[in-house]
Length: 409
Image 1 (tube, rainbow, N blue to C red):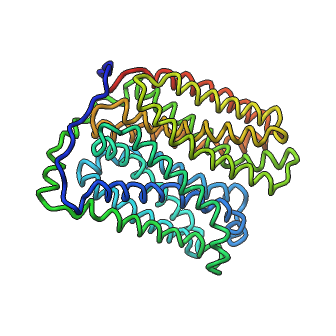
Image 2: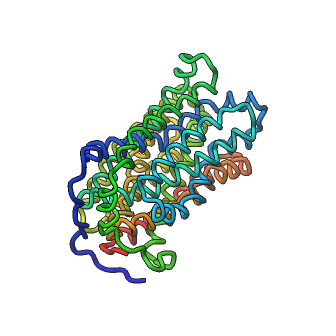
Image 3: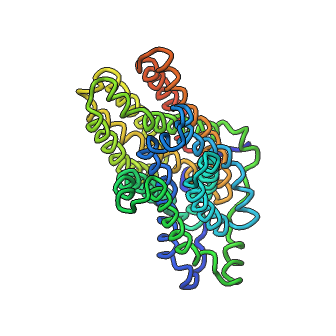
């Protein structure tokens, strides 16, 4: 398939001015509220896993699946989204996905193990649809500022995750309904996002025709055979694997090396907070570059540095490692999403590349927490899993070097 050098960013012509109902400020508000939901319901469950385990009498492995299943189904659901958006329109698909996400949140808290895991599946598929829909939407609506807007909504995703992780326990106490009330409350956030998104759906027939007539572009032919698309997918996949593995095990690694569990939790929260800065600043920088090779290698290098500090000085270097990993993980996520809009020349191409990269990415990422736990159980140490993560950071650097070349699909 054709890959072309992009000496200057390809800009899709701006759409005509819309009605007040679809004002750009309403569009931005809707995007940010949707993005706020995309990690919150996943992060909210982490502090509650112990209580859920006691409620249903789950084993450690079964409890781990509560966080693994949504990630796995994010990968499985991603390739379906471009077809949905072409058939029903991006606005309707986003609205449907947000409503399905809220339904999955409620399903997850019903008094049944089947409902618990069924809700995790529904949440994973809904997030997959949103993950793939938003890059194409941003490419279409903000063609001249696609990378900047990618940074804005990826930052909002992490802000949602950070807030959810921090308020889940206080929310449980405030509502007085146990973990079910705390987790179920996040369906309200999904409903708010759906209401805020309605102006993008309830447009006049003429406005829909204008959007449909806008040059969204043709899908990319043979994208699964493209070396560039695979480099982006590999960078996304390994970066996501590093994030999800350390999200699952960082507090445990620190505690197993003698750190107080309370302090280990603070280190973990600090790392998540720093991710917000990386997720915003790195895509912003990427959008101002014609090539992002050095930026991609820098993110992989910071991941490797943070893991190395964790390996060599897990307790004394914990805060340094958390800061470095926070920048690297947030920056890698933002850069991977920015690649989707920077390496394509149309909204249709961005949606298609998003489907591929996030399918590969989340399927790879789902193996991280389980694989690291299995290696730890097999060896009785965290050394082997961390060394393997170091090697994978090197692979991400190679993939990122190729993904950051000045080319478009």
